[in-house]
Image (cartoon, rainbow, N blue to C red; front, side, top):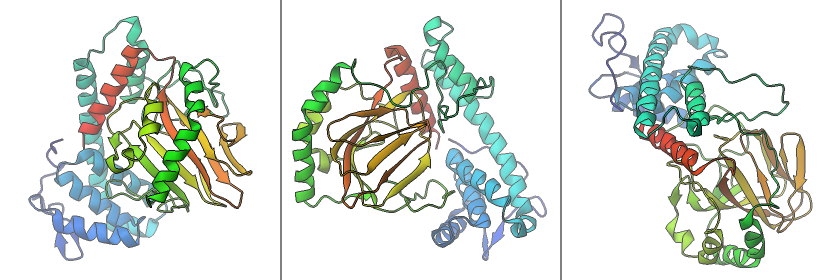
Length: 363
């Protein structure tokens, strides 16, 4: 995405250059400030000034969508870091203008992109049109009295029932998956024997601000052995899990750029707690196939809590508030995968995949 002109002339008195730690945020070379901001964020991830400066440097590079994430983090931080507000007021003002400009660019590219993908006025596209209208601010999401509604962080598809846990009795692939549990467990054991390392499921990224403080970030107590990670195959692991992937072939797994497939072995160490959170979209269900399940490992989705029991598939909407904990003295390991919600037509699935293609292309 190409950056538009800055909201005020770069050479205007008092506004042309941001001075920080002896460096200038120059339009032709933002790298020194970006490096300084990133170094400070390594130590103080919730520092207001560093988040602002990183956002500005990314914006100058043309990485608008990524920059807006740091701007929004800064807006939230400014509410608590009042002592920094006066010093950063000019930067905050610029960030507000840039965020507004970026929002307009995002909306227009999304509308144009979905039109090019074939979104039309027919009845079969109504849910996707309504989702796009909510995303672009042209419509409001209907009010709800549900205690635990779907609250996805990226894409909400209206008209889908709120489903905490979804039964698998009527899903033709579920029994095949259950019958394959021994082969899947053998693949897991092979990976562990080959010393494949569980990495922290939640990892800090230079592409996103750290806006929350909890023990799960960069903690391998919530560990993952990825087979597919946000749509990207992990080839070294796939070579060790051929039987698992054969068993999963019959599942309606989404292919969405930057989002899916997500297939992994997930480990919770004893005492580890995954705090309440929401997923990115309600267009899919997350599946857990419990493999190693000590007593005391559980998953709560909305108002319902279920124990992890070997071979009992848990299928749920992760856009509803959910959390998990292992209260036992042993590791809990499950196979995690995602599948399309069966209410969605093939055409709706295609348009949702197109939506994520457009979003991921806008760095």
